[in-house]
Length: 51
Image (cartoon, rainbow, N blue to C red):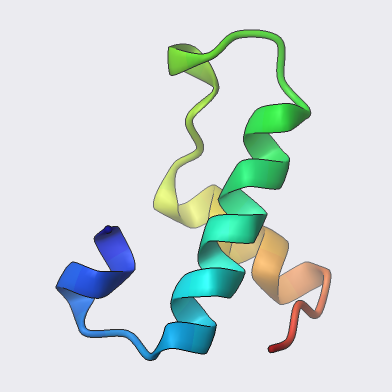
């Protein structure tokens, strides 16, 4: 939803959602596990996620 509201292309929204999901799955709690924008962008940058 964030990417849609920001006007991002579909491929960027999907990459962002996948990275955010991967971060949440790797944590122990649910609502407290939600990543920040900076955390997701860091994963995308350092893991070279591409569309």
